[in-house]
Image (cartoon, rainbow, N blue to C red; front, top):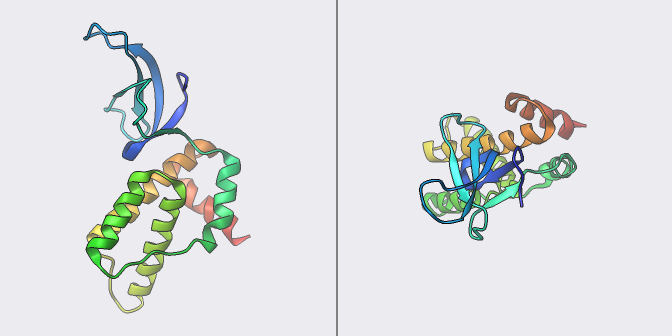
Length: 164
């Protein structure tokens, strides 16, 4: 069970802070809810039943796990598919999984494809660019909270550690 002020990753919403554990005041049942505040959206509050088993909610990554992930980043296999529909479907499923390894795989794949295309004067498709941005946002948010830094500092931090 999570506690008030814990940071968690909630599905595609990303990193949220648990601001309260409360009963629903509107209905007359005794169901307790986590009250979540996404770190990237102060205007949104989410209520999730505490005992709900099908909710994709997990604790944020630890610093030790981040260091391990960063060490494996250069060796992460890419998963480029030429079929746009199949590739986008696979990438969206990977995003939905919320697994950091999958986010890294997406980012690495699209980053390398973007570099390759720029050499011949081409760009990624809008969909691929949006997927890469979403994966980066989720990963940077989680790493920033776990490492106690601003999200903008995550990429330089990663690049610095990978280059060593």
